[in-house]
Length: 639
Image (cartoon, rainbow, N blue to C red):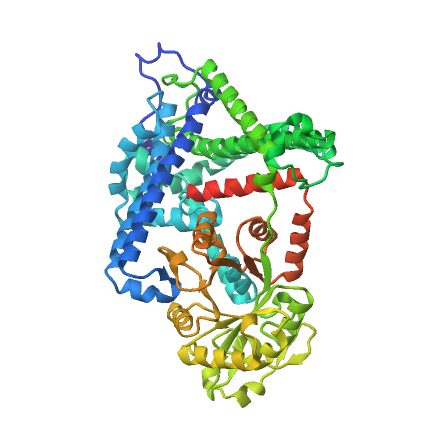
């Protein structure tokens, strides 16, 4: 590719345009701050409406088939008429998100830089036809990178629909334990980063210059090779200035007021109840209660105002990076310019001032209301129970009797174990399909007799050898001490397994200490129907439809599924929610502050520590946690 080709069209004003007023790039950005902000907010609202409508349609399609779809019955979905319909809706949703968040945003930035009309709905009219340009292998490859790779690498344009896509924590722990898998994952990550850098300008080439996606990638590669360092310097310069400005705001609006509030609340009782009816007569309040209300009002204002500032910086930062990339693309392909034509002014100084004042007044009013009614709004509820994963989590060898004993000693609410049937009809506590990872052989439980398995040994955390236990041994330990969540696992998980387990539990007289769980929906429905006195749980890795209507007593869901809306829907059906596998500090804090009924974790000691820390928080910390939870819910709605 030659420079002549890339510089066919210079972004220079014509003779008639030279007489018009021009402004610098910095002034252009300042003038368009409200447009950049409003574009992101309005697009988020539009996408939220589309997402709700699409989810309702998907649920309708799923329920029309008579069954909620979970991972275990995915095959039946694929073989039904619903699968093509769900795919069609899914592709339509993805196309809409791409049009709104990528195509429209690039067109919007291009129009800003050229002094033309901007706005989400104006840009949508130009963006929808661009979908056709990507209906080819190269275009689909670019879109696939946006959907799957950008959330992992952080390089390139992203969309809300998949920006939170990540490898689940339980899968990461598996990869971390196997060096070959970890190396392969690292190599894949490096390759994806390499592709992301090479394709940084591909969408701009396709949308602005109307070229084929293959040519767009070629142009992008050429730009990166020749101007990559210049672009990197521009990005680093912006990030440096952005960081300094944010740091100043953070120090003067967050750190200093935060310390003052912390000092003011040091002598006050956290969680002190002031009943709403007492607020009717302020004169009846004690001096301490008046001071406490003032502290809570100021704390709410502090949290809400800082969350608004953080939201502004986050939205503006991501929007500006797209504007900067668009500006550099035009400079690299058409030649740099130093002056820009101002567009139609939609937000003057008075309107900007009025907007800020309006936001300030709304936050102040909300702070007064929430500070006065702190008790009903922020009163702590009982946090989620702790359930040790695979016996005792990391405190002992997985699925061992020692693990269950450690869980009991630690005061856990429950212990989760996995069972499988041997060739001669016994039930051993074991997770994997084979014994290779734990005992070094490739045989499965259904291929081996109990004597064969008894001959196997595994090493505990102290290097001592231990045997693979029987279910009966686990039942003896748990009776009256801990709730045992028994997962009916593997190929041998069938009605016979359910019948045999129920019989053993009855013989041990510990039905109240047992919950039968499985990924196999049909098996859980069988237990519910034949043995209604037993508590049951459906283990769900992925699901579609109204999963709250599944015939069971509780749902055990992977972290990503445990959203506020889904948990609330399950509770409305009178069922409990348990989230697995919660192993990070951030996840523990999130779910202890949520409405889930329990968490399954490998890190029991850490979970206990965090739960104790959360129970001793100040009112300011409680308000901050509630605000973080609300922001998380808002993000889930926009995704």
